Length: 236
Image 1 (cartoon, rainbow, N blue to C red):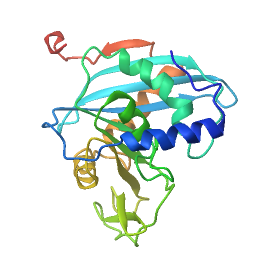
Image 2 (cartoon, one colour):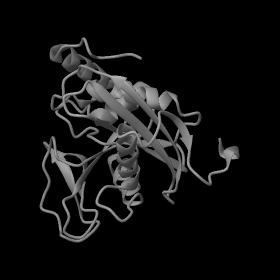
Image 3 (cartoon, one colour):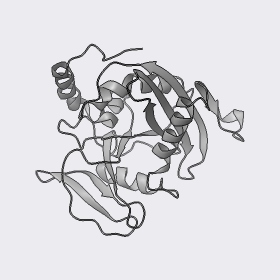
Image 4 (cartoon, rainbow, N blue to C red):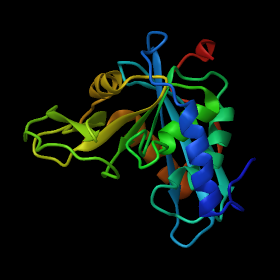
């Protein structure tokens, strides 16, 4: 397992500035058939993190499989540097998947970040993978007031550039914040996430990843690669 635990914030900033030059925002190269969500859970004041990636069919949003691991980290939680705490353990969960999804959604920012290097961009560049950031709170940029109805959206922009979208997923709920991480466009990121909505505010890929890692953290699921019930083994 590679780690950023011994990196300083100055070193982390330098790496972000180098990696941002490798981000490619371009139309998806192929049709999406599978999409995954990634998330982390942890106990307060503990160095153990519980990482999970859940793979779903797209656009049906049927869970096919999931990968769970636990790992140690001492990199602090610092705004703008989430990737340095969470990416190493997510990489282990990713490597445990026998077949990779077509696209990955991460619980955090893509290019809506002061250095364009949110966790979705960081993970996407490392793995040369299409990624989307779906964050529960704003970090960078601004947007005009949203309508109160479901699927109302407004561009998130900075200095005239559109970086992502604020999207209200249900009537009168707080929006989520969508931005491309790598190998997808801003507009495609919004459209993909609109197709990932279920009954809840949070889109299904990251919502289900959050659910699985919390069950794992509390001992109700075990580490490893798991095929969801009723999914034929021939798919893997």
